[in-house]
Image 1 (cartoon, rainbow, N blue to C red):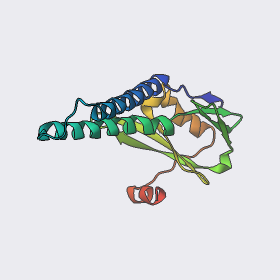
Image 2 (cartoon, rainbow, N blue to C red):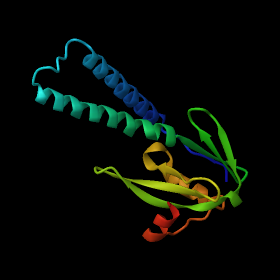
Image 3 (cartoon, rainbow, N blue to C red):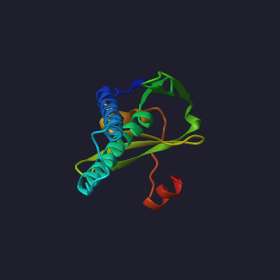
Length: 166
């Protein structure tokens, strides 16, 4: 069965803007520190603590939004029983035959506010690929497309999942 996942480009754009905003803020803080406006000779401990806390957030946010920008950007296409994974930024296509794929399993990805479903593709000779629910408009169809193309669903216990991820 031929199938194409519908990647949610809105998430990609939001991650890109959040990363760029975080980097912009880091540059602004560095420029502020290097300017004559900040005088660290006097006792400004509250300002220094606030500045350090702000720097932590400014480094943390670009990392949190930037890392998935480079790791979660795959679009799936099934054509003639083969799986093509297309990088949505570079448009690179990687083709896999059924025998190169061990299978897939489902998991939950918790954000603290909401639990998203995730499909993890397990390959024999490459790292697993996570397909989070919020990245695909037609996420509900991905599992049935995988099964109808002969990729089996793997059932792991929690301990086997940890062994697999080592």
